[in-house]
Length: 309
Image (tube, rainbow, N blue to C red; front, side, top):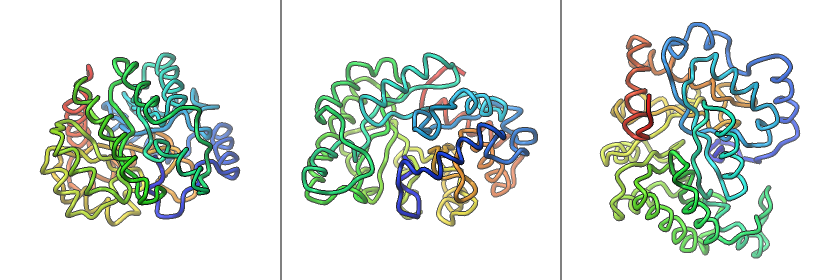
């Protein structure tokens, strides 16, 4: 989720609601060139981490998905955060074949009741479920999901005294993914190294680290372990993500938007179609034909998620 932005995140902001409404009236929030000239328009491309049920997008999701299709996207993985959000993701996927559902438990949501009980502030209320009940929801419905996610560890919002509890729930979900042979989509903010240690310790084989905020050297370890890293749409203005595109094995890279966060232009709402912008940027950095770049990303996507082309 968009909490890996440089600035302090607030999931629901009135100003962004106005911006989203403006997008609905005037068209795409991403450059028109991406719709017409990008490699994505000629071949299928994928957004492996979106939040289409976020309040900024859900009220006009049909328009967002229409723009994504015009940008050349063939798959969008919409990630759930908790039981209510997972159910909304499932409903959206049933309505639109472009959407693939991932069911998870956002690592802040996993311990949010405990955080609020400690008097901490967070811009979202806790749900009427325990962490164990949220894990059971995923267990019950995961056959309908393409992946388990997003799940992971968060050391930015979550205080250290709750890390053991957070890790307990994370391990339960990792084991569930292993038992059910599902890939995992990882949130690892400020806990990147620990997430990697747990995945390796538990014998995980299929995982993608979304919006990796650790050092490029650690990202290289993630790739060497056989895991994937998805690069967000703000890569051009991020030195770290640019270095990852330049130096990590191309066989271990994917694209994401984390929409509505992390847009190519600061201050705008993001949409899935913006993965085309990142694909174009990768082609520049790799000095490769755009079709070859998209073909590589397609191969990586199908290798990890094992969905039909």
